[in-house]
Image (cartoon, rainbow, N blue to C red; front, side, top):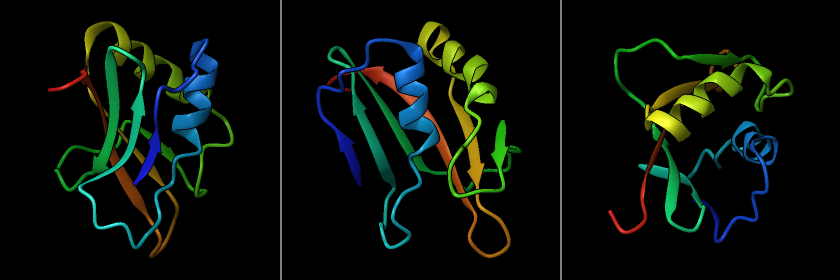
Length: 105
């Protein structure tokens, strides 16, 4: 798991960079593969196996263009809405569900 303890996130762009570059190690069994500690809240990414289509897709291993992530990050931060990302192509696809919750829940 990639863990970012007390992430020094000063603005949304820094957080978008972390999310956009967070392709987990394929050998990580999960379910949680990324955890970002924001002090009072925690953002987590878990392998997603649901039926919902991904909200944001990159055919690369990471998001080189983070702009498409912005509306989903805003809804997650302000409305606590989850979103699903998909990175990679062919047989190396990683689908993650991003959630936010109060620390300790």
